[in-house]
Image (cartoon, rainbow over all chains, first blue to last red; front, side, top):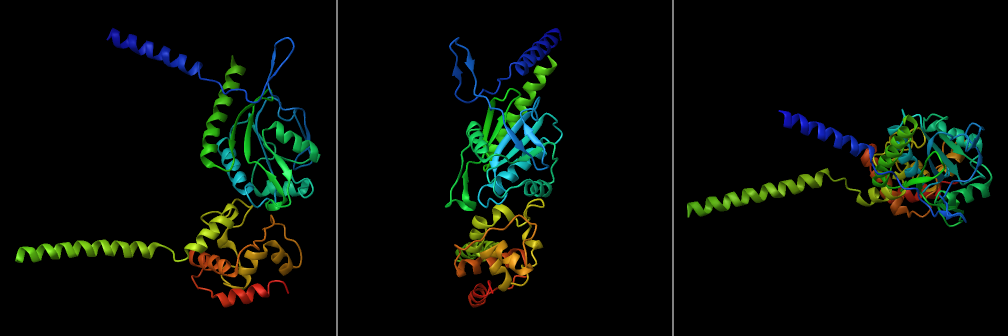
Length: 209
Length: 140
């Protein structure tokens, strides 16, 4: 009996060690090394966009939040419908999670005005405070796409007139990229959702202790 | 001799069961395989593999008023998308614009229409003549 009790205690101790030492998601991107030898991780720069309700969206909007970023346009006939389905699936999985936000950047700044983005968001039945559909200065959007490991460019030959990658990017509280996936592939998105959970656990652990 | 005969009969019965299964499986299979493949490749991203649509963003096939008027309107919607719908109602609607599919040949359009009708509609089949006539008259 004593042995049994002992082994249960050991098991519990081991188990608690296990959960505490869960491997963290890596910080992705090519870091800069300063003259002092400090490592500067790849960080999303400041941005200034406008959301579906005409409200500004900056780094302040996502302060204290983990967020997912992607690039799309509302009239995109090729990969976006699948991406939007997958993003909505993530949204539904984390509907109760207050610390998670979504920013979908439109790369069609000509057509996707604020009212167009508003109509799109309304039709998707989502919380506008949680999921931002943003537009803004075209060059700023195309340039920040690179910071988010995405490419976006105009291409007459592409379906809908724009070419872009369908990656979903996970960003932590410090503006670092912690995970990404192919937003057109449900299996890749399944793995991504586990990464989101992991990052949320890390954030909660840091805030409580 | 009798034993041999019985065995042959049993074998024959067994064979008939297999044949029966093959026919039954064939019956479940919808007859417009190319139409389905074309639907999956060109339409399903928005309208869904099951034709249910997605949220209020993309309408389901079943909701389409064009589904039952097989042939005429449906061919034009498939080929010209929202351009055709806008012309019909005399102005742009508030839906996410449906893209055109001008790369589809009349035979391909026909196969999609027959697949849609089989899967979601009245199962009435359309002919190539009807589709070609319809496609000529889309923009009038």
